[in-house]
Every structure is written in structure tokens, then in C-alpha cells.
Image (cartoon, each protein chain N blue to C red):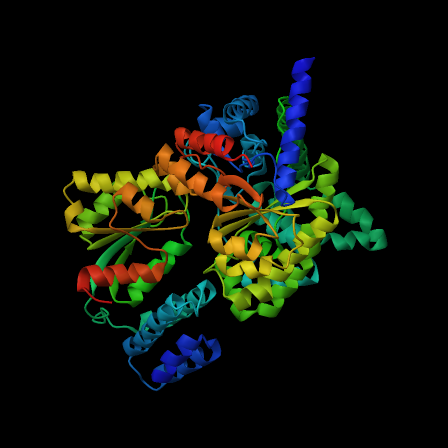
Length: 419
Length: 211
């Protein structure tokens, strides 16, 4: 059928276009690929809560928006998480629409110390035990019973396995927990089936999916998800050695999991949101000591495993550009937020593909003409090199972006972006 | 006392605690001791502005001040109101957003710089800002927002103040991760500040014509 062949051809063209830009070779046209999340739902006329609770509605909306904007790859949809699964887990570290936020508000992480300042020794001695019996109960109600069981290491003491497993399998709260986990799995499988079908549908429509795999850098893991921002920054000053030791424990995990998930999903691109390294968050010396080593190890290891990292350098990364110059050239699709574009071009034009950074503020409050002018300026800057992929400065156009502005951004890339 | 100020600025925690206990033990006025911390914080703010200190140092300094306040507040008499205030401010993170770290640092820096600040918290409905404006009669309102979803709540908050005839008597500043001068214009605020030190600068300029 010629329709299928057309879409297959388009699929290959789009993959090649993006791949060429990443390897700093001029593609036929500047690609446009975004990290958009709830904007895609809003543009298709459904609410954030609907997207998270009605799996089919989300899928239909995603395809409608994909058709409308016709970008070179389908955006990441990991942010449109299954609300029912989150409720069943009793997640405490997120708030989300349709549950404890308004219908059209997007999810927010509950910033808190899920690991306390005096718990580094416990974590360092046995990270698994600490996560399982201390952190998981703080993250999710379903895991609260784990606080009261002895360490699982004891199961490896020969005869002890009998009473310990026996107890574990018979204490009512634990049995309930295991039943709940099974139910979570069943609901998650329902959602995952719809997601897998969506990915197939998008590919049949001719659109490669940007990625299905995420990772984080070790410092952010601690700062975002364990100690919180305040906690981790106090740790930099008060217990730097323990913080660094914790970072080193997590580094291999940040590498191993995405490699495994990439193999399972057949994806080569790995998305890595980065939150804490930008201007103002720490000094250059602190970046060099606490942040850069783990991030560099992660990026290099993924490249060596044949994968393409997609780091999102949130904030103003201008002061850190000289670090990024250490990275292997032509292997990374690097998303920038607010950064000095000229400085980027000077320092990193031969190293990284620049992904971004059309002002999110402009997309929300500006006019289509202003957006057109901004996109043209961006395209002109990289016209000689080919290492540009267009997106908004934030994680794709935000939900409040005016659709006509996003259309203007898209049209300008198509009309003005040919090499 | 100078030594204490220097230790606070240097964020030398051991020395800060030792000196504090020593001074209080020797009968120094608790108010004066707390004021030394404040002076130290103001200097920390200057170092942050010069990009010699960064967020970890601001947070550490804030933590030292918090610990001192905990120790010293019980020792203060009712008369120790903290001296004349340089102005009144109301700060909050607008409706739909629960981010608070930046807001808290702004409140900290305004407080140590002599401002009387009311913290409305996070996810603050428009109504609450209007009520606070009426009840507390601040000179300045600070609207904090990290997410792009806060643009319209900020705009509507400012419009609501205008509807009540309160807008003209109050200066409004915005701040947060996805804010900039364009958004300042869009929402109808008077200024956008990229960090807590700028917040202090605006208040000083508006209310005292100085910096």
C-alpha cells in the first residue's frame, strides 16, 4: 500500500534528519523536535486530568496533536502518567490533576527531605536496605509496612529464611501490600498496553518517538529525590565527603538502568533532565567537585554503549559551557533553556547539537510575528554548521503557549530552515 | 560582636555557635547578638550578588540564622520588637504552584534587611492576596511562581488588586524560574527580580530611593 510506504519513507527521513543534526552534519532541513507534555493535551482539547485518567483519550489527543504540528519526532509522553496507578500506590511525593490538584494543573513534585541529614551512614552502609525500608515508605503509602520488617539481608542467614519468609508472607499488612502491588501491576499493564499501541500508531503515521528511556545524574538523584535542594546544599557545606560518597554509589545505577531499558524498548535515545548545575545553584568549584564528574561519567558511558544522550540543561548554563567541551563531539542532543547562544556557538559549536531554545515566555505571551523573528534568528545563527534542533527553551512548548505561536514556530522551521 | 559577624559571613559554623554561646553567656543583649547575624546575612547577600557566594551559601547562612533565632527568641523581652521597620511586604507563591525555596530566601533577605514580611505560603488564591493587601497594608507585594501556569494567576491577582483600588498604592515584584521582564509586562507588575538580592534592591529603591 503506497500510504504505508510513504509513512515509512517519512519515518526514515525524520530519523536521518535528526541523526544528521546530532552528528553536526547539515541535514536537509533544521529538525523540530520538542519535549512538550501537557501542551499536546490542551491543543487537542482535553484537560490534564483527562490525559492522566483516561488512557484512550490521551492516546487520541496525542495523535491529533502530532498530526496538527507534524514535528519530526513524537514528543516524550512520560509526563502524562497514569493517575489510577499513582493513586493505588498512594504516592506522597507528587501532586497531580484529577486528584489533589485542579483539573488543568500539571503534576508537581513535593520537595521534601526523604532522606534526613543524619542518615548518610545508613545509606552508605547498605543503600538497598535504606531505600527499601526507609525511603519507599516515605514515598508511597503502599510501602508503609516495610518500615517494620527486619532487613532482608537476614534472609541470607541460612535457617532464618524459614521464619522470616513465613512471617513476611503471613503478616496481614504485608500480604495486603503484596496484593496491592499486584493490582498496581495490572493497572500499569493496562496503561502500558495503550502506550505501546500509541507508539506503534505514531510510528505507522511516520513519526519516530523521541525516546522511551530516562535517566538522571547522580547529584540530582540525591538533590531532587532524597535530600531535597536545601538538604543537599547544606550537605555540600557540612558533610561534603558523605555526599560525594553517596553520589559515587549512585553513578553506576544511573548508567546501568537506561542501558537495560534501551535494550528492552529498542530505543537509542536517553532523556536526562538536569536540575541543579546551572548558574546560581552552585559555584564553579562546587560544580567541578560535586556535579560534573557524575554527569560526565553518565554521558560518556551511554555514548560508549552506543546510545544518544538527550540532556536537558535547565536554567542558565552559560558558566558551565567549558565543561561540556570535554564531551565527545557529534554524539549528544543537548537541550538548553536560557543560555548565551553566541557563547555556546563559540565554545561548543563543534561539539554539541544545540536543541532549543525558543523563549517559552514568548510562546506564552508574545505574538506569532515575534516568534517567527526569534526562530529565524536562531536558525541564522546555526546556518553554517547544521547542529541545531528547534524546541522551546522549557520542556517543549508549555501548556500555556498560544497554539498560534507554536504554529508560527513550526512554520518558520519548515519554511526558513532548509539548508 | 564583629568577630561573630565575620564568622557568619565566613559560614564558619563551629565558630558561630561557640561565639554565640560565649556572648550570651557573658550577658550580651540577645537582640544585639541576633542583629550580628542579620548584619552577616546582609553581607552574604552582597557576596551572592557579586557571584562569590551561591545558593548553597545563602541556604547555609539562612540555616545559621534560623538556628540562632530559635536559641535567642525565647530570651527576647516583649519590648524587643526589633526596631523600626523599613517597610512592609507580603510575599506568596501564586495559585497552582507549590514551589517555595526561592520565595523563602526572598523573605529571609527582606527580613534581615529590616523589612516586615508576611509569608502567605504557596498555592495562594487571588482572594488571599487581596485580603492581605487590605489587612496588612504592605508597601510591596512579591509574587513568586516557578511554573508557566502562574502567568495568568499573577495577572489576575494584580487585576483584582486594581479592581479594589489598591494597585496604585502598592509596588509589585515578580520572581521565579520561568519569569522574566516580558512576563513582568504581561502580568502588569512593576519589576522582575532574578534573585532575592534584587528583591531587596527594588524595595530599597522604591521605599528609600537608595541602594
